[in-house]
Amino acid sequence: MIVQDRTLPFNYTIGLPMIFYWLLICIIGILLISTKSLTKRVRVFILTITFLLGILFGGLPNPLMPIQQTLIALGVKQIILFLIPAWMILSLLFVTSFLVGRIFCGYACPLGAWQELLSSISFKSDMESQQKAKLRIDLPTKFATRIRWIFVVALFFLAFGFNWILLEEINPFTGFSSLQSINSFVITLPFIAFSIVSVSSIFLYRPWCRFLCPFGAGSAFFTRFSEDKFIRTEACTDCTLCEQICPTQEAYRDSLKGECYYCNRCLDICPHDAIKFTNE
Image 1: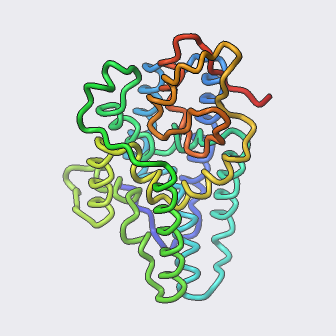
Image 2 (image 1 turned 180 degrees about the vertical axis):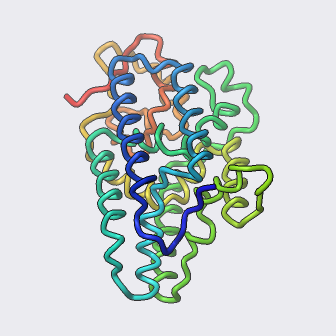
């Protein structure tokens, strides 16, 4: 069983393969998106593989670990040198967001992949099925973003002021460890958090990503400056179907796509093939 530890330095044996994995997924994802080859079956396949690998490796790749380690260092008022590799990984993730948007969150993050798979229960790709979905709860993206930033500020305030590392206690990524073996199954607070996120994903689109994730807050910020994103072409007739189907309300014209997870629902529903991925 792989368990993420708060005191161990960066584990290169596990960490480096995970870095290569999410870089590979990012490259493959962008290629599929740009060529409009990311079909529903391909998406489900990639998401399922990412989720299963998350179980196998105890929640890795875990974008929260560098942030959690930083909070621990703030709590003890020390800068720990072995955190440098973790900070480098976090920086690389943010660079990825700046260059190509939230492709990591969309397809390489195990918790994000699991939420996306569950979201298909209530968040459909066609209006007929969408209108029949009774469990869906839509909340404004601005509201979700404010809640997330309040949570992020609270995490750092509690760590620096009271040495209370709340993220460490509820980190749903470490909850993956409970799924690794039936014989060693243990109900922990992170697993309870993971379970709450899982159930909530049926009603809310990516609740952890949009409402609580500290990495998601930073990734969304850098993604707003990315030149690679979905845009409408001249073939667009302003039918607004993409806006109606988008679970994060990011399909409107001139959207900065900070909360776009490349779910491709807008492409699936567009009757005129008027949406493309471009950096032009």
